[in-house]
Length: 375
Image (cartoon, rainbow, N blue to C red):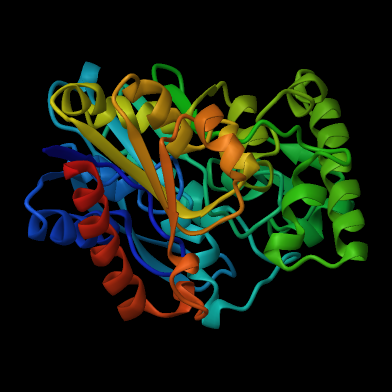
């Protein structure tokens, strides 16, 4: 039995490659033939996925989420300049993983380091630049990205502001006189977030609490994002209002909005990486596909990587594995899964904080899945 293992990471516990390897050990021990294809959806691990697809890694030093120097990687494909693609992810440049001590900083985190990594990527003269936006720590409307690309936010005294959520309300105007030339570069945003920039469905209200924002800070950030849009509209960006209301503008604390302001097109992160790693070819040779991520719930059925995989793999049976799952059994087939296995069903311990236990349970799960399908 040929089994294609195509998981995302188990956030906070194992990388996608580690998840795939643990499952593969169990499958192989039970006599199956596992094929490992660790994936990403635009979040943490996106650069690693591109490197597995043959891109070259380049180390860059940028400002982490709170401004401290941080070493990150970007990925650049080979080939002629007119076909070259560069990929930059926010998770590894100034995302949640770069917060000192893991302490959340909802108001002061910035996307500046992401913009600095974009500048480094542009030195390779790519024809296409992919921005992977999962795992962000900031809600600055992408002002940090814009600042790194020469589009600065100024206060009432004409002084430059440090680009973070806290500073948005102090914006008086935007100075784009030193903006970097992006003509000739196709900008692509890889993200599966469909939220607008502001409103109760916007970046601050939906994702701010996950980044440590209190109720009052969420209100402050949402007002700051609205103010950013107004200032941009008065500073030579008349399309700002329409772009802020578009699906995906709220991704990565508003970096999606800033990227579209620069001319980027939004695409599905899950679909992009499935194509990049030639998922369809691998799936066509498999008798069974195993996918998964750290947590499965009803939201997983709306464009998340495991359900996109299930749709692409059909009619090949797809099993989902997860650290925990609240996806009701009667929703499994709707999501495209023949079975769902959760580590939390095998232990009362928190596997997201217990790496050895996660590895052990995944290996056992692989063995169990192979035994079940052999019968």
